[in-house]
Image (cartoon, rainbow, N blue to C red; front, side):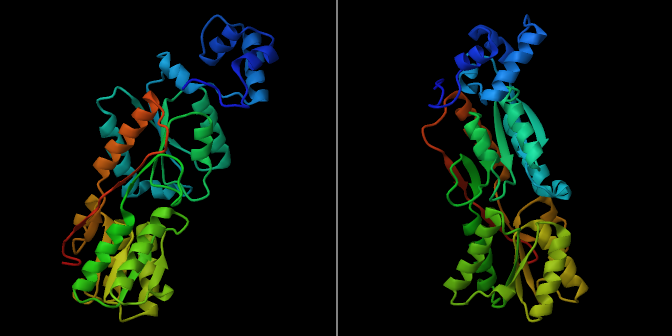
Length: 341
């Protein structure tokens, strides 16, 4: 801990490039007073030219912390920030940080330019760690932050081979349990509304749906699957498409409560009774699930426990970086209500 990685620029090299002493470089990095503007600019120019990354772990040991954690939301479609998932996650993380004395900073990192600015902001020591949510498969931000030495924990993961510490719910198992419940209730023509399939969470929930059908001896077919973007409107459109393809649908597993709410609206518009004609199950168990008509049977992911686990792992990484990445997967629970009793 506290050593530069082999091949990376050192503080001494920055000092030599800027023509100043090592102590001056440290004062510039830590925004200390008493450094002339021309000297500060020379040091900053040398840092940029060499690609020097300040050793944040060493600064933490020295007690020079920002006492702030960034929660970075990487979803490119700004409309999705109005969905319950984001508000509930922010609340869970904020509650978990309450007794730590740490400030929670919310930031949007949606484009390459915003990504680079956030990395530079983190390198400047303005935050002690980062929590990332809604990270898609090809997003390089977690790797960039890891290379910068910033403690980072993901909510969810980019793939099954994720090499950054993360906390996730058992999305496969939760989806499998939901579809098994539909099957046990006598439903046999079961469709699914997935999330965006460039997100691993959506892939996992689709996998659980397919596994449940396979265990029941029912072959899954792509025509019984429709993709959404986790919004209510996309759930409405997807349900309408599925009804057009298969008017005899008698069960639906939707990959989020919001898409399930959209599915309920589409079924109502088509004159289908829920659960009489079609049983519907969502995923998340947001407050929305108890306000739909009928109330939504859903898979509860434990957001409070997820928030606590995210903060705990991040604080541990800040105090003592772990030898290995840590992966935490929390259990889900099927909550029965009126849409699929």
